View: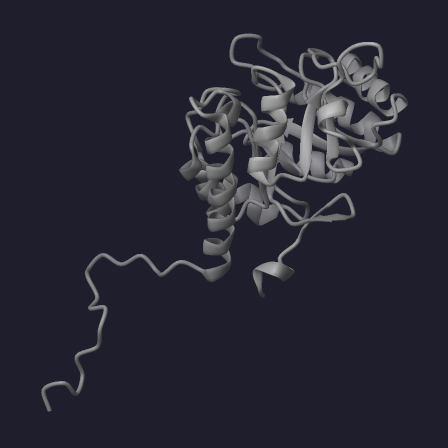
Length: 260
């Protein structure tokens, strides 16, 4: 398979980029757009409760990140109950953003870990209402399987707490999630540097979503470009197939016949 044929399919749509980026924590909307362009991302996630995307009388993020150029993924960041998340998703659809939604229902204010039962509750309702649901969830294979069975279009296990930059803390759980899933697996939260993104793709994840890892960098534009390269490299490495691990060395060049 050539890299040109390796499309990322999500919710019935194909994407060239496997990097999804957020829009928070930048110094202004101009920097946000520059970072998105440097990342090569085609899908951009927006916190409905925190960024203006509905009031045309105020500065609107969508003026800088237009829906005719990017796929807008509204998210329910800041919601602490299933009812809040459902209401926020409906608001985004009523504003004309579409049926795609990333569900976040936070269960702990300090760590921002998701409330899994509430996430399942919100996902069940929104799937029935025709939303294309992408749930932020813990790296729990059972929870991910249940969300898939509800009809979610992907599962989005965290790599580490939101904004922590700790990287992938439990690659073994991710491996199980990837093995069992029939829908895309997107690492969401915890990526701190380019090697974290590359590792997620090398493990077999279909994509990675990040915000703070780029926006919080000393040079967000340069970091956005680095993340783009890392995702591309990680996917290429996964498709190429790593060599087997061995306990002892093996000569790179054969010596048979050289001394005959």
